[in-house]
Length: 376
Image (cartoon, rainbow, N blue to C red; front, side, top):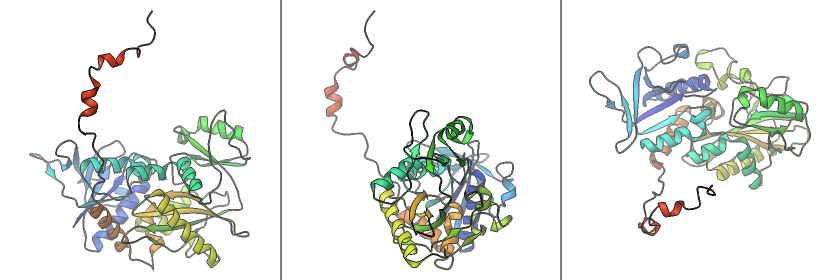
């Protein structure tokens, strides 16, 4: 098989995506897989990058030796490596999406891959968009009977219905980027106007310092399976920060979530672990997310209250650290790629029918009567 690992993209999480992509490429190539590394630059360009590239090689964009890739849509879609005389089609059986945040994780890459006829991990564009939208995801969890904290859109005029202090989050963001804790609604609204991370929308949740983080992963191939439960160890400010997630442990191949401080397995009662595993399965069913997914919980150690907080359809380091000791990393990634390959490109019913609606329409001009507003 010929696989691709796709990483980068126009996202605040671009650098973390590079780390995840390089780690995934190493895992697969060391297991004997044939891998093409595809880098989506922050300004939109696509490149095949040399095997064995290091994180520092991407400090100024695509590393030396990269080859530009042309994306062709239409009757003969595909990815083509540009050459001096002609472009050569990339033959790929499936792509592993390591695109964190932005259009990559939010469904944009899934839509592009479908148009290219390229099977890809990261779920369908519909499921990926749901996972990225914190407000929509919270609503689906509530509708499915999955316990979660109250969540509301931060609006200039609407009261959220619960008291502060509040935690304010980008509606479509991740990796703790742009998250702030405020005492009252007025401060939250000021933050929404001034923070660059909240321009496309923000959500409010009650901030409860008594809750701690728990994380678990599920994968959907070859069957629905759940990983051990972890407790990441966050800072004293009550937020599991970007630095704690991704900058702990230095650099190199240990960079990223795999070296962040944690308890694994989490030191919680067995009943809590089983509840987390059950809730992860319910999240999988309600969202229809596929591949390798991470579910984030909030937990009250004294009362054992457990609520689902967020879901990550493309988790940091592909959540491989959560499967360590349970499943080999290469097996986790390979199974996700095989699942995507076998599922193929999602088929969407075309708009072509019997032609009855077109024949019955008659002249379009007649249908414009009354649409131009009152005559002077």
